[in-house]
Structures are given as C-alpha cells and as structure tokens.
Length: 277
Image 1: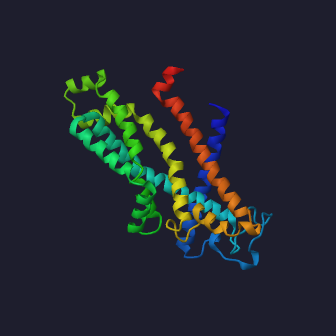
Image 2: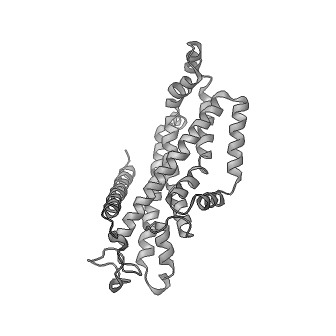
Image 3: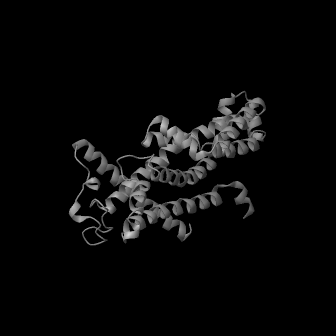
C-alpha cells in the first residue's frame, strides 16, 4: 500500500472520529434538552482569533469554530452515507435489471436514466428539498434520487459483459431463477464497482450539501460547512479570516482524501486496469 493511501486512511479516520464525537455531543445535548456547546452564544468572545482557549477562533456570536467544524463533519458523513444508501441500491437494482434482461426492460432503464440526467441536477435537488422541507431529510432525498444515474449506467454496462459468460450460462442450465443469477452470481462479480462508486459519490454529495446550505435551503439550525461559509463570507473583508479558512480547508481535505482513495480502489479492483499492469 502506497504511503499516500496510508495518509488518506489516517485522515479519513480523523474525520470519522470527529464525526462520531460530534454525534455523541449532539445526542447528549438533545437528551438533556440543553443548548449544545457549539451553539452557545458568548458575545464577549466575538471574533477571537485562534488561541490556546479557542484553537480555531470564534465567530460573530462567540461560538467556537473548532466545535462547529466537528459538527460540520458529522453532517457531512450523514449526508454522504444516507444519500449513498438511496442512490447506490437504486442504481444497482436498475442496472442489474437493464443489463441482464435487455430488450424492453433495458430500454425502460435507459429512458429513466436519460430523463433524470436531462434535468438540471441542482434545480431538481432544490425542488425536492423545497417540497419535502428544509433540513437534512430534504437533502437526503434530493441528492439520493438525482445521483443514481451514474451508478446505474456503470453497473448496467458491467452486467452486460457478464450475462453471456460461461458461469451465467451454467446457472441457467441448472434452472436457477433470474433473481438468483443476478444477485447470487453476477452481483458479487460487479461488487467492486459499488465500492468505487461509493468513494466517488461521497465527496460529491458532501460538496452538493455544502452548496445547498450555502444558499440557505439546506441544513437549518446546525453548523453545516455550507452554513459556516455563508456566515463567514460577509466578515472576511473585515480581517476575520479563520472561520472561512478552516472550513474551506476541512472541505478540501475531505474531498481530496476520497478522490485519492477512489483512484486507488479503481486501480486495485477494476479488472480491466489490473490486466493492463
């Protein structure tokens, strides 16, 4: 394993630990029905630069930027995981059906992919978020139901390569059902695509949530990274640089880590790339 991949795994572990700590802090505050530490207003400590008391400084309400960044990591992992749980199963099932059966079933799947792909993605996400309501549920559904197309197309293309291979023909001769052949025989042979697609989709979903929250339509009442950037941009010209800087670095590092891991997984798991080496 390359050193850069090990560093990415360490960074990912740090993000995951921060997200878990943020989740515990959030749940404990809700259980005790108190204002969580990251939302406590202290006007006497407004705009404090990074120091021993507040490592990453404070914002315009005296709230600790470091604690709010941790909560941003919690929300980022929520969005990345929940949207993947919607988009990936939907894309995998439709890709399996279209690639395996072909004909009219495949034509229907292709039409669905083309229809969703032809819609402006961001506007569709915003529309779903507005219908469902502002907050994380709207973001989950908006991103999840608009980003399955890439997964479906990739799985469909791979299944079309496998459906006429010897092990599938043998399963048909033995009288196995179509569902068993798809999910017990073909799916394990295309499982590497699902892992690669998750590593690609995760940072994309996080970036989309940041942008939606930046517009004021996403997360409400919680320190999403998009909310933090939106709050910090008006004060950047006043010399209050730390909130914008550290939030941007946190987003950049998370996206970079997942993109690098996606490239590594593609190199290691994709049979076509393995055969070229």
